[in-house]
Image 1 (spheres, rainbow, N blue to C red):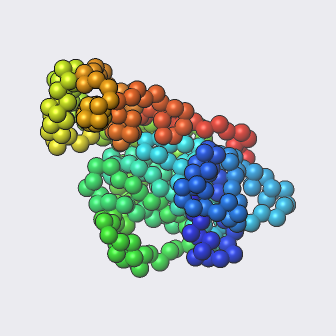
Image 2 (cartoon, rainbow, N blue to C red):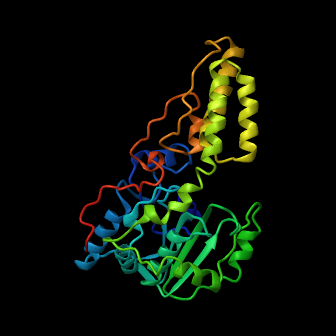
Length: 323
């Protein structure tokens, strides 16, 4: 949640943000430099609830500012607020956009399977006549971030791709007609609605990409756990790095590596013993980056998007969503 550069590039713009977690808003102020007196209107509430409020006001004849641009950035890895993906929600957004308005959202999927991306594409096309899709990486990448751009009028994208390609490290592309046709058909022309939104099933392949080679990982994990219990942390580190060289998505190995490194630091600084035990069984949440951050400590999943177990969609509290 940090759209405030828009206040500098287009001074005088009306910008508002809905963020369900007030802590995220506070982080934007404290860590990212968002001025407390910014002209951005901030609402600590679910995005769809805010949209529903605006629609009620608009239909009641009140003065509601329509938008040139709406950006949805609510998805975190495989945690998807499903109510922000549906046909009904897209219809509400359409009412809040000008005739030149653009709605853009990002999501994560595998192009090879593409079931969730294809369903989002089909859903947006039910409302918006012009839908474009951009990838953040080469389409051969296993997991990819996709940007879905929906517009009421055709967009000139000729110079846009050249602009973003000039940025270091960008290897993405704009999906062509053939790509889009494949995605539209890949899961039987599925359209997401408030009554039918199987995001967990559609993202199954993306979830599996976190836990490839689990059998191989398990055999190494048992061996490494034994070394850990003997206090042979240098050997643990070497073995973990060897395994991760072949399979970077091995969450238990990441956790063991972090635990061993933490033990090494304690031993060299004279704090704590140099023996220990480690549970090498599968974790409830297989997110290696977060395991690094909590190396050596138990991790309990929280209730927000960052702590949602793999494959379980985040159900935000909703009120009066049906318009």
